[in-house]
Image 1 (tube, rainbow, N blue to C red):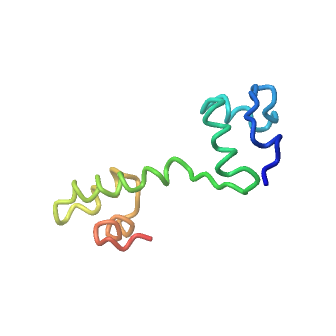
Image 2 (image 1 turned 90 degrees about the horizontal axis):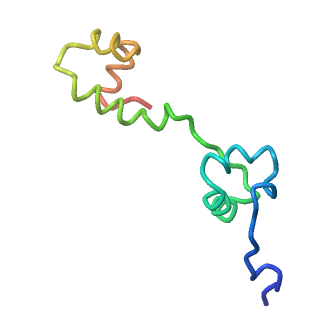
Image 3 (image 1 turned 180 degrees about the vertical axis):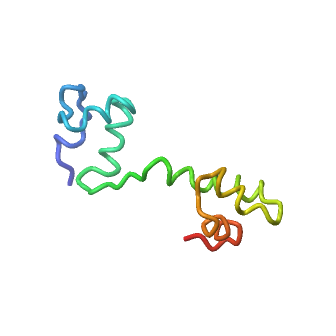
Length: 94
């Protein structure tokens, strides 16, 4: 049994979006925002920082530039510790 008011899509305006979410709706667009509400509405949603999304690419870059002994140079270049560089090279970074 379906609820009649749930079967008809009604047009949503930016003014219908609660103010605390409008910046997100404006950034990704109203249609994408409404799709997000269908996918995740009512849930707590964690959005990772951009740097954590870029970490895989950074680690691949570090491995590509590794010449067998340039741990210190890579640490300076990528602003990481030598220990972090070694973990990335060895594939043990968590």
